[in-house]
Image 1 (cartoon, rainbow, N blue to C red):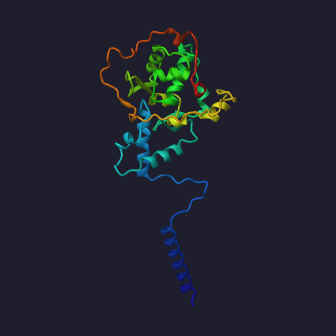
Image 2 (cartoon, rainbow, N blue to C red):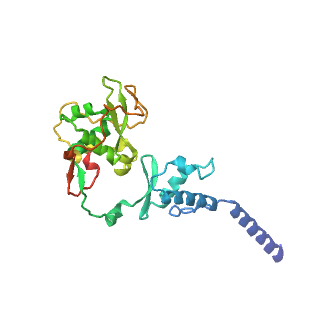
Image 3 (cartoon, helix red, strand yellow):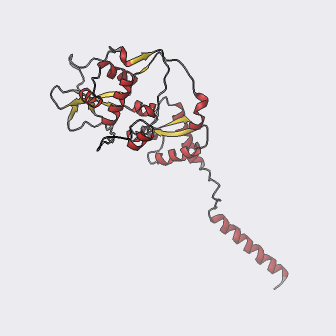
Length: 267
């Protein structure tokens, strides 16, 4: 075989190998993340812009309005969440919706200590905890659990915060109003769902429950489903004059001139 023919065969072989390499997908090392395509990057930018501009968390249905109908919104959100995982702002899911929040390890930079005029009393916190765990629950049932009477003002204050709502009426004599928590409650305490409330073991570990509990003691599994229960009926649009008033008439439920901060330990 002449030298020229041998060189031509080698060149042809190299060109064929290059063509095969181009057809094969590129394999990236395990520590290298592939960048999204231009079209996918644009979709991520749309979601990113909507979440940054929103004044409240957005659900997937709201985000999907601005994207093709066949788009996998959950996959895009998961990808965007990964892109923000190590940054000063994280994409988090709260109350079934999505929002950007300051990274937890940097939250101390944004803390501001201010004197508030009023804060929730112990009675209000106990009432809020009972509603969260036992919803839907009536005022009489709250009093039975607490062992003391509950003033109208306590419920009114919690209604003002937007953390509880009137769900409906119990199918019982007098048709008492039933109460439950709201999405604002989940958002304020940074819960994705009501089931994230601390359980029995967590409450013990936090020192909120005595280790010497009576036999059979248990913490109920909270459920804030919006559907009316079998023992409830829908709340009437127009309240009767005999309904519980919403005006604050009990100053004992608020303590003036003290600073406060809310966290899970209140429950």
